[in-house]
Length: 277
Ligand code: SF4
Ligand code: SF4
Image (cartoon, rainbow, N blue to C red):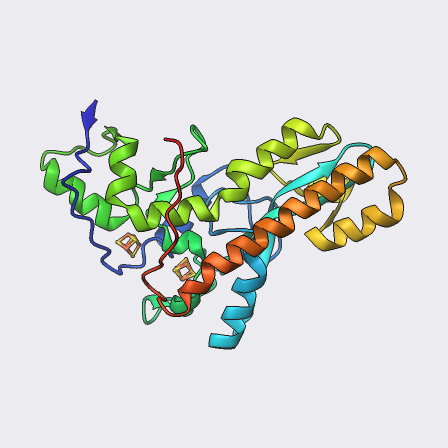
């Protein structure tokens, strides 16, 4: 397999909007279904994912800076065994009828909320890697990436597969990489910790309409208010309180880190922390 040299990578975002338009367009070809009118039928795999920790500030920023409302749908949730109830920890942004991001201006070919856009857009072309959740991978559909591949491999054929080195990936896309880690902090740490420790909660990565019919789905705070009223088992109550404390703490930390976006809307400064590669 050809190896892509990321040390000498010259990525340049072309502001082509492919990530806001064509990448979302790919939804059509996946097995997932979505009616593009804001009604969830089944979650598309490809869209802009928004973690629970980012949602409140994102909503507020978009409203304050652009006077627009953010519409989201549940993407991933924790469900409670035996209680038929769950809470969402990952949302997905609304997609327009014509299958592109709700904030993409198709005439001007640009993002309508650029200064307030979600962190998943800021860390693009790095995307979640289902084969290795602790490290992102590159979205090959990005035109800037494709141009660079063509530069390095002029004889590239359609469908050719490339190997990448993760350490090179992190250093070549440092800003995007740090943002990706911040954006997925919950997924990378708490979610797995919760799943492995709390047998009564299970993580669901595919929220189907059937599941929504069978389970009551709440947002994070509503869920815990409900739990306080309805769960009598002391052990479960204590464990749920721990989950809530960890979530609240993470949300606060995430919010504090994101405050730097106000003064550096396009270049985000995040305190570097050590992570394992
Ligand atoms: S597809 Fe790539 S090059 Fe085009 S706007 Fe998105 S990040 Fe930039
Ligand atoms: S929010 Fe803006 S940058 Fe993100 S996908 Fe939508 S149009 Fe593109």
